[in-house]
Image (cartoon, rainbow, N blue to C red; front, top):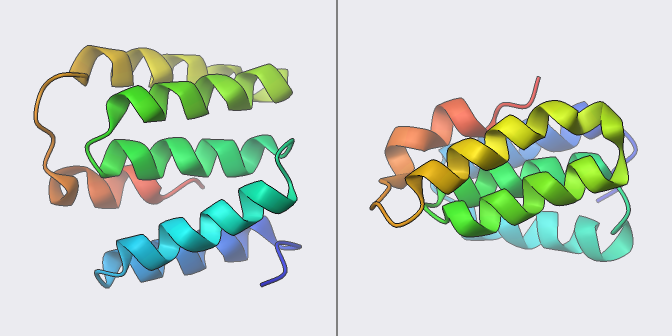
Length: 104
């Protein structure tokens, strides 16, 4: 599980989640975050996973962490605001899964 190619990591995690192995994908992402807690791309991925899982509060925090680590991720502030807007409303994971896990 070498995170050298982040696009490959993203595609792998998306494939796992899309096949119903969301917990496995989150676990792997958690491992990457533990190894590289200052990598904003992993925080961005975490935000999308949390959003897709119906956890907008956690998504907001992850998106803002990505921005804090690298201003390049400034666009994630909008994602954080969007997560804040839907916080408190039930979010069906299937409705967000496809659109929110693709980071390309």
